[in-house]
Length: 279
Image (cartoon, rainbow, N blue to C red; front, side, top):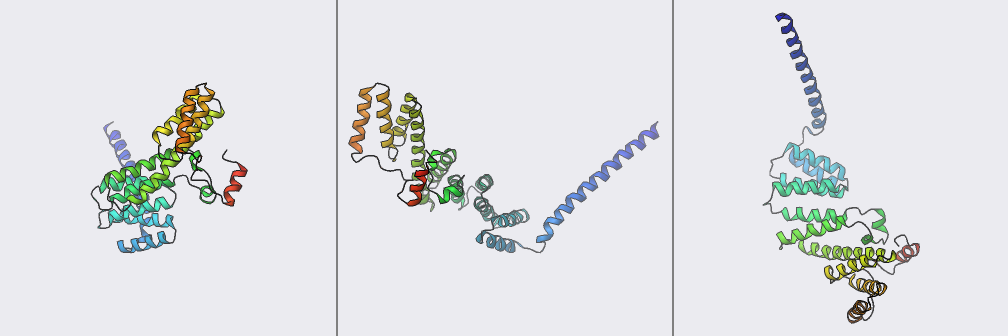
């Protein structure tokens, strides 16, 4: 009985050992296939080829090279720069989640780096451009009519950059983008308020319009909000409040509501408006 037990244990040990060897062989073979391609490359070679790929617009190749460089030289003098380079390559390759994750990793590992402000700025850029496709780039679409979660995240990213690094060279551009984002968010609230007006949900429309007047005071959305307040209060049979909204509108916008920033008189805009896909 004892001899049988010993044989059984020996067979189990042999099976586990052989299985482990096979697994190790497979993993080693996979590593060999991956590293053989760059077996003679040094860090400078990786950086040179990755930058060339990025400059030519081949961001997928650049990512592969930067990742290989980071894996082979994780503690080199240029390791921090590599992390930023791969984050940018992810951004340009339309992989926002990977780009933000890479930027966050850089911030966590290199909180005192002179380039950490760029990581915060890059996060804002990623969210600012998230979801922009072919139509948005080449036709005058109104992005304020769409989901605003990425716009809000971008605004918060840029605001954090301004708060942490007020003297950063990226602050002027971030401020301009924040103005555009703020206007976009305000107009989104106007679209929601108009949606409620069409469905005769006047109280909901009033709440949205008042939110614009209070939250987005210096945006082109304010005159539209006042017009909605006047119409909604009239429908709710609140003539005094309707008159107040009309009086404030006339006082501040005697020439009428300015056209939203996304509108223009170009031929493409006129065609887009005629089609009416965003109405």
